[in-house]
Length: 163
Image (cartoon, rainbow, N blue to C red; front, top):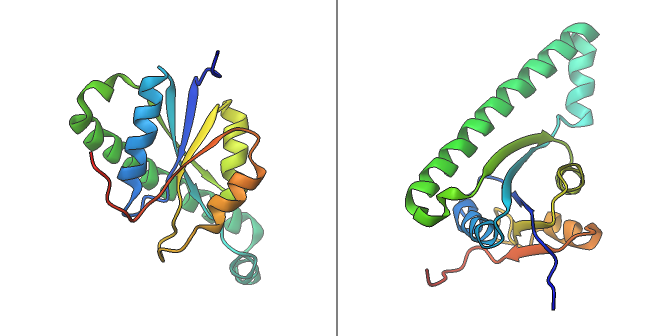
């Protein structure tokens, strides 16, 4: 029986306390399939209320400039954090250091941004954790599972597993 080829794994992370645990699953999946691993972090855009307040007090061109600069700074910070995690993990992962890992930071609504990135990058599988920061089942994960056209590998978080 021929299994579908996995060439690209999209790992989504909120950079929370269980990020590294889920990352290890994504890394191992990419390694076993000789696939590229894309490490995705989604930044939520400013809400409509905040945007309306800003536009009320600042000229449109300054709003656009401040927005663009803010997004650049956040993206640079997140990419730096992603690089740090990747670097730390690859020191400990030995054989997995051959996996090509590419960080990606996008803005948007979490579930839609994840699905859009999966499509744009030609991902064959999405890897994500199950619980949000409050320890509850993540509605973001549920929405991705419901709407995805590719398999979603869901890693339970907040639990202890043997190494």
